[in-house]
Length: 427
Image (cartoon, rainbow, N blue to C red; front, side, top):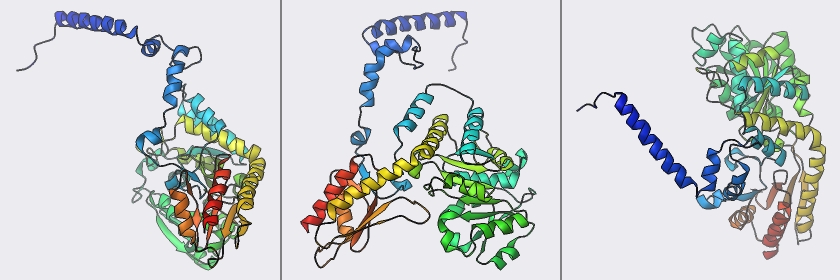
């Protein structure tokens, strides 16, 4: 049977019922200061909760959710790997995120203003915050394909019959998985090895020439030659430098060099939000890329959403790294030295400090030993440290282990030093 028609008497009944329930609710809330405080409105500080509720909020903030959920945590002495949740944000970044979470703004205006600041810091014409370096590559590719035509942007990745170009050239030595970001836009990857192959590969379907900086030494064609060919043939260029800061000057090096688009991770050593990145470069291409970016719907980048907190957090992280990066480098070396000094007098142990040439160029410590003296493999040491309390994650070789300190919380280097010394001394 269907419900009877709703007349004025039904409306009054529902209003009266609502008022009765509301009175009962408010009566019950007299013994619940926190809930009563919520109904009292916004505090002078801008928080939804009044100052009277701060005690309850502080108590809630002390929950150890990892422990509650049974999720193992560890000291990261290995790398800023995504599957290990990357790096840890610093206090200034966390403050920016917390403070910006309490107010609203227009997302495009924020991207405009923050993008202008990042561009100025990095010697670019324009910039925009993305949801990681992969997202920056994809949105940059989309911008190259569509230009400022919103209808074309909405067609990506369905390029057939769109009038857009369909090929991106990359060196075979740069064949790492992240080229998938370009393929997501529907393009065909064209692989080359030599200068001659590159020249022959360029045709009227060529949309872009891409370069993976971490694989520079694996390709025959270096930056300047790649750019020379591209500029002479009027082909836009994109470079991925996701994990290639430090050194600090890499923030602007590739913009100054002449790449049209530069893609950078916001996590890694910069220690902004792990799910953030930057696309920077030529003003027209950044504007075109944003046609495919959130908050616009019906585009390939709608799911690559970046919230206001991440945008501001990354801006603060970049600004801070440029300002304090040299001091941080010295501190990382000090942490490395502490661990090195703790183990170097163990019989047969040798230490070596090294810095990778291109990607992840931060101080590394390698600890090796003679297996005839210390009957251990690197893997055994790695597993024992991982399974200890607290767990420590680092890299291992046959008769060695290696680690970094730049992603540690200050003081953790002392724990790492003591645990490594303990395991090696046992042997």
